[in-house]
Image (cartoon, rainbow, N blue to C red; front, side, top):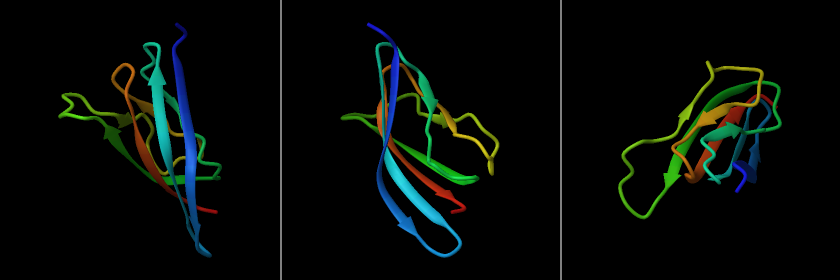
Amino acid sequence: MTATFTPAITGISRSSTKRLKWGTYLCAGGSTGGDIDVGARQVEFIMLAIKASSVVATGSSVDETLPAAVKPTIVTPSNQGGYWLALSKP
């Protein structure tokens, strides 16, 4: 099985000065993270929440210094999925 990281945007809210986007991510085949393309010039904040049916010993983390003009890279335990929320400039 090939290691895959699949992020998806599931919602967007806009104001004149900020953009809020949220979505899901899924790691499979031994994947331990990847880039989330929020479609913004600069990501100011990103929050991650793990999807699990019980307490998880290790969580996901953002592997960037924010604010950043990049696709934020997240690091997760193997095969973990969850939700993300990002605040950016439009």
